[in-house]
Image 1 (tube, rainbow, N blue to C red):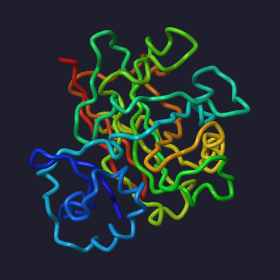
Image 2 (cartoon, rainbow, N blue to C red):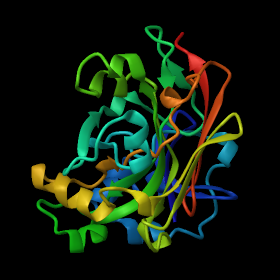
Image 3 (cartoon, rainbow, N blue to C red):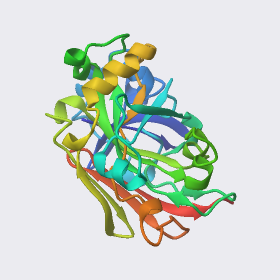
Length: 280
């Protein structure tokens, strides 16, 4: 299934996204959102509605971030060797982690917002992992059994603010800079999350292209490492890192600007597409 969060008719809900529309799980199952559905372990109840008539046309909804209200968003930096190389850094023994706040996220189709404070607004196409079954100190061998699904993520980065100090967070969680969507492909649809192709396009031109087997720290190890720090909960999001090709490391630099359109495509998952606009 493809599970999404959306707004329609003035209410926020979650549902099953299909080519002919969206089955409204919030209305049919009485859940308050996708995080609540995962926490209730109601995926099988959702699956039983997979062939139900669509409640909304795709063009009649506004997509919210896949998980609008996660307890935590853990982002991974420098997790592809070509990105490590282009930044001039070295591979670290342990994953580089930083946080993004839920309020910084937007959904598929919404505008990525270039803030007033900077023009150094960059794209970062990434694979997001959504936790379905929580746990603490999850073993690598068991880690994928805790995954509800996978989604596209654009970890938009305000580079000069990112460089203010050695800590990445200021440039990584500006309002309206984290695009997450359009939906989550449930884990049963992805036979091997290390066998996916990730492509980022800016105005139709490919700017990033990789396969997820090239991650330095693979998904099971990320889950084990993060869950050692604190318990992972249903609906938590791990954003697994961007490959080489970011705008900041091109000559000349390739910054996002109003009127651009940025797409992140992951095989078997979908295409996340967002225009770029200046902050109002």
